[in-house]
Image 1 (spheres, rainbow, N blue to C red):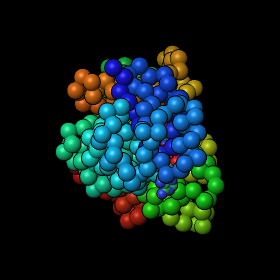
Image 2: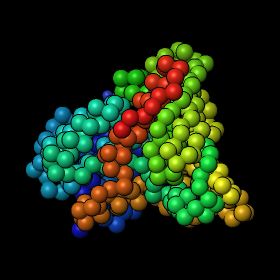
Image 3: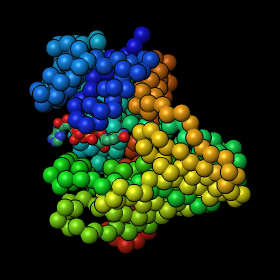
Image 4: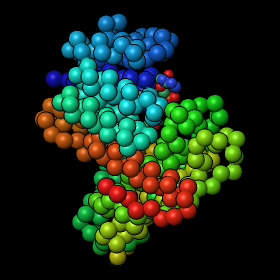
Length: 332
Ligand code: NAD
């Protein structure tokens, strides 16, 4: 059977990516809405035919406990609301798939993991790139040592964040700036490519617009050492639509993706001249179908809540290094 998914937060990502993706999934269907904005609810109901009985506000999600049509709540609200909404969904007995970053602190991530575990429900993190065939091919190249062991990794993702009056620039809702929002893709890629946890990080931050970026980071660069001997250089910014790459230089050659983190159109090349290019797939449909299958088959998700927490722990170490000017060891 198809699992019913309730979208919690009907903003840009839900409207333009996730709701359309749900129409393409094999194991899911859009079955509920959680929102504080009646106009958004009306728009989604008109387009997708969600019945009134499956529409909720953020404050009355506990009523979902009585709704067998909803199996999964997909949390797509600002970063610092993820814990609150996830915990409410878990208490209503629902599985939770939560957008990245999982939350803005390790403690809050842990509270989400605990709530889902206590409820006996699965928690997943919206790491769509781990379903992109280009990234899966890069992981294979490293695992099979096609070019030998990785030596230097480079990864960066920068976007022009746009207008100043948005939650992404408010610390209380975003928890951080470019690093939390898009730098996380570069960090995550270095972890799944090496298959290792970084042990130490050294970071620098720069700010050219202290008014717009009064509360969050604007541009960051950081370097991490991995236990197998690889080093990763990463960077992120909210100032430019520019860097969006991933590159591994290994013992006997290199490969790279550029662009690496788009919804579609990613592609890359290898030092032996072979292109890395796969037909586009809907990454949101792929991540949701995998999560539904994990639930149906009672197996763990490769994008588990624990995975989300590990990245947030490293993000905090990166911020600490930038703040103190010292290399920071990453505990675990
Ligand atoms: P958005 O601003 O377009 O939507 C956020 C939604 O949350 C809106 O519907 C808004 O009404 C609602 N909301 C509830 N309480 C709010 C409050 N107190 N303040 C502001 N908004 C509130 O944002 P988005 O781009 O859809 O991002 C939502 C989440 O999805 C974020 O965690 C973001 O990191 C993540 N995201 C992931 C991807 C991806 O590729 N996986 C892409 C974009 C965004």
